[in-house]
Length: 145
Image 1 (cartoon, one colour):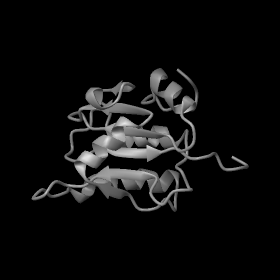
Image 2 (cartoon, one colour):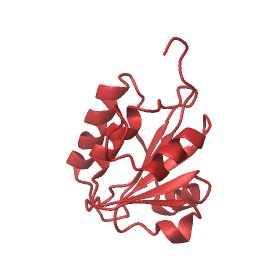
Image 3 (spheres, one colour):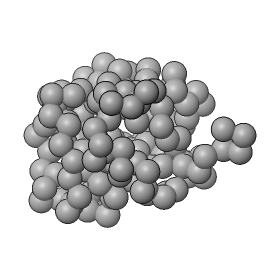
Image 4 (tube, rainbow, N blue to C red):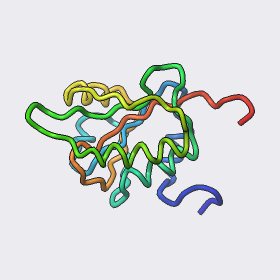
């Protein structure tokens, strides 16, 4: 155990966060996401919900301030609806850790899958909410931090 690192961050995830460069993306995927068929670097975080994982991750990295949308979620399929509380729960953590972060962009499901294929890693979580996937784009550590 390390002091100051949330226990939701396992050693494999800590290594990935360290090795990611600015502009690299990490996908926090719900329990139903086809992570292993989308990316060769998959980390297991079974039983951990995305808001808790976001809190642990955003204590260690910042989001890319050089792009309009450093956060991306999946848009609902035609005829589907979103539970607004999902994004609100993610946003509460994001705003507490990195206030002023731009709005979350929503992209079509298959576009999200294509983006996942080029992400640095996928973290398979225990999240069970519908459309509970989010992509984070890592930023450059601000001077003085």
